[in-house]
Length: 87
Image (cartoon, rainbow, N blue to C red; front, side):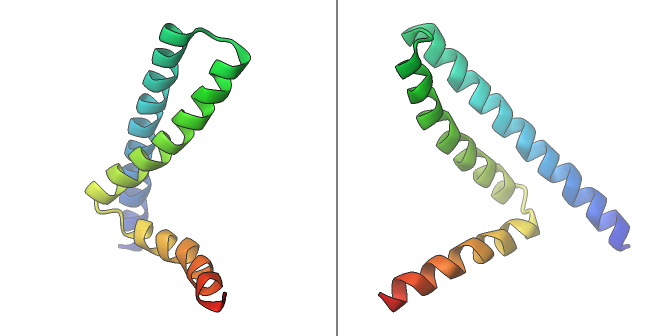
C-alpha cells in the first residue's frame, strides 16, 4: 500500500511540475517577445518567472491536495518563524 501511495504522490508532483514549467515557459517567452533578449530583460525574466513558478507549483500542488506540500511548508516556515519570534 505504501508503494502505491508513493507512486501517486510522485505522479501528482510531476503533474504540478509540468504545469509550473508551462507557466514559466509562457512567461519567459512572452517577456522575450515583448521586451527582447538583452541582459536586463533576461534578468527581469528571472525576477518574474522564478516567483511565478513557485506560486504556480504551490497552487497546483495545493489544488491536487499533495500531502507532502504541507510537510514541506512547515519545514521551511518553522525556522523562519523561530527567528522572527527571537528578535
